[in-house]
Image (tube, rainbow, N blue to C red; front, side, top):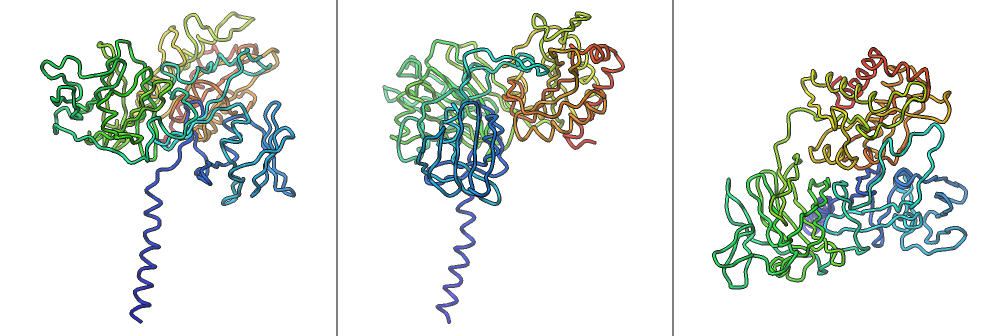
Length: 525
């Protein structure tokens, strides 16, 4: 009896421990051109391959997906490419040619899960796995030629032209080589650098220098000259209260790419054009990453690795103790920059983005010559004025006068401020005067509910025809990290709609509708 009791006790303990073991592995993150995707079912790893819900592939790439229940076949079609995959089978057909899969498609909880890499690579999309952040980065290859604008559809430039992955302030990481781990290899175990300093003081890793004299990161010992031993190398990372400072031996102005990851919360900083200095590499002891034991109430620890040796990219990952806003500050000194962390604000931050401006007028009315930039700025300022009266909302505008702001800068403003919502205001144009209506664009799943709320409010306010809520590969909704929408209020090319759009009463009505949508999304109404 004692034996049976002990056996059942051990069995019960093992069952209780299983969830804890699995909970230790952070969830897999998906990114398309730097924008985080939020699938309805978490991605899984099967035989070393990431499988994801078919819906996330269709929405992120704009593919057509169909299901044949009799053959248990999933078809993914885009342009000239046709892919057929079969549930629980390791063979797939692409444009009539058979391919072998390492992981078969499966159905989990009623959701069809497809092998991500195989499918998206057939659709001209590059895939990179980052072990350090357990993230899949996908980069959709753009056609070099200009795409025609369909009649009745907004000009892509009206909503934003996609920037190249890895361009400055693009809000996304640079394209890395197709390597499952950052360069540096190793088993993945981590080495830790001790921290010095305490509360209210600069904390930094103690790094060795050639003469044997220790030096804190960011400090120079007497007579040591430069703490770095290599040119164009990261040699120090310091945490001074709420400021993270990165020091390199580069003599050029650095353009780090900074983006957030969640579950758990962390900040990823990719520094291009540099390598790791000898001291930092030595501490890694041949492993894939190093750890700096720098911490405070906002930062739990800091990790680093040589993310891409061929492209010379150092990746720094700041594990956050809690989600906090941050801002990037370039330094007056070449080769140095800093990140400031601040306390979570007490109000919701909403960014209002009137499109175009200055030399970019947007579309215009052929009948009156009035321009889109004038209309959207007027509505945007009315929205901001109404939001300023809300006690629980803080409002910011990407432009408040007739100035031009780059698409990347509009996105960077909202992302760096950790805004809660982003609303881009535009007007449409069609090839015929009879084309009209209101439409709302979104890009990520987290933005879809917001888009539906906003669209209904706008329809009620404008009375224009319903052109529906649509997925759009537009820069300002694709690259922002918060729920975001691009609103096409009406058509400048439609005489009736354009006349209304420049009436003060109509603009007030539209502005009030936008504010109602914002408050509903934030559960303030």
